[in-house]
Image (cartoon, rainbow, N blue to C red; front, top):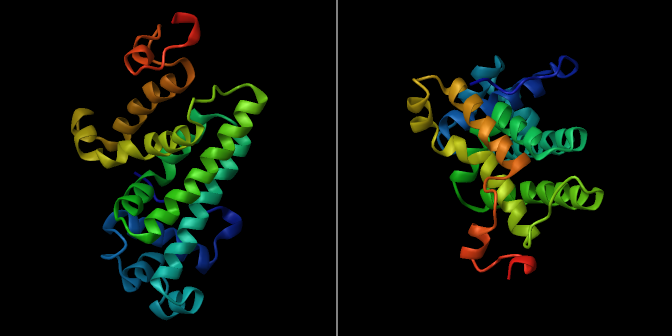
Length: 203
């Protein structure tokens, strides 16, 4: 597990504070993380954190915005759900799992912003022909967000399954998830039929 990387061009005190907050929020949750701990982890004073962000809530909002922007930029560059999934798994999974799992208005707002990114990816992919749209594209967007975060919601059991190494667990689970995105899971429409959604050709 790694703290979110800070680009060389952005090695400012403000950037270090954001990176520290991403790490502390992911590790302890929003309520338990303190401004003092975030400042110490960033090697700055608590007063400097307050100077830049004012409140812990404002700092969380900055973290959320950075995560959403990063994922959106990677999505634009990679144009592949499996690549975007890899970004989430490799960089911001722990943060997203903790922040979304905490509940409340801030979690709902973060989920809505992630949905916007997923909706845009689905719309662009469907229009250009590389992505197969669902019968319910909005639910498809929610599913993309869910699959990106889900491994971190059960990271403890996954780590035990992989012999005690979380990084290995995430790398292994990313492979079948990418295969699921790319090739699908079943070779016929029996699951659609069971759900009453068989294609017209098979009815």
